[in-house]
Length: 475
Image (tube, rainbow, N blue to C red; front, side, top):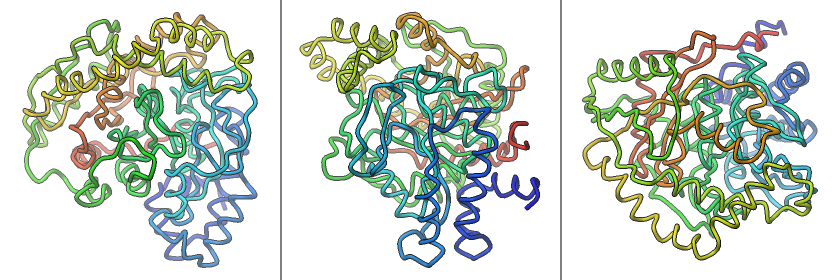
């Protein structure tokens, strides 16, 4: 197979690849071998993967090619990457730490569902230690790099997954988001990343992550591919604290169908009180152009700000308590990075148990106040990141509070919607003067992923981005 043919297949996406496997145009084994070869060739430059699962992936491909009942579904034969915080039965989940870990007893429920649809886990991707920051660099795994520019970060904490998808090392990847960790790397790498409604995707067997801030999701290059992955993953399981009503139809169908009537879209660049960031000229242009496009598509666009109140300090306290509790699960906390130890200590002192309970008790009122905006609108448009991707090392090696400040200035519009639990999607919005991807964020009311996918799909049809590829991908 020529390099041109390989690239054409590598960037098809899960929707097209699964069709080719089901119709016999390609075998699952051919796909696994193709993507393993791309990982072998390109991963040394990116450091996107912690390890590959070649033998297991080839065995799964053989079962699918042999006509196994399980595995001929909507993701038949599609290789995927798995983020290093999602349990894989028999594999170690390091969470980016040097602290030793035992192999997991079983797959995460979300991964089990992806396998049931026919997806083949092919490798485990890099994360910052304990998924704390919007860059992917750690003492345990080194620095992961953005395929659009190797001197820049692919974002975090799902940075390894994003770098792998953007470079065509996999068609799609599992991810998670506790403060922007799906949307940030999507924005850095020119991908589509949806943070589902809290409870849309099962958290089992891990239980509630970061006091309910975190949720599993996925990264893909196009809106329909993202929707296809959520179709496979969604649904609560026994033990989940949160759940949400199932969609009216499929998310994929929503992504392929423009809104039936004009949507009411609020646009806002307002920062939550206590957030400090400067929106770059490029990102401002991307936001303005997207707002105009939405209006040209026939929707009602108005400037409206959410009533954020003191959501920023409420989020940061919840985040720090979550860090403290995640840190407590390490077998060897003495092996953790300095910034991790510092933030965990701050979280324990600033948010003791009684304050933790007060934060949780207050959350309902915070959600109700912010969600009032969606009584008058259907979707909120905000900027994505404050700038294009920052240097690859981010704040790695700095003190915890310095790193936290840098993170907050980079991605101020994302964390609030982890606290409220609303669905939010990052979509590409062109390129900056530095040649790096730009992005915007669309936010919906609770349970309204279908609305977000419908609008995002319409924007993508008017402004296609699926054919954009970083130069590295052609090597």
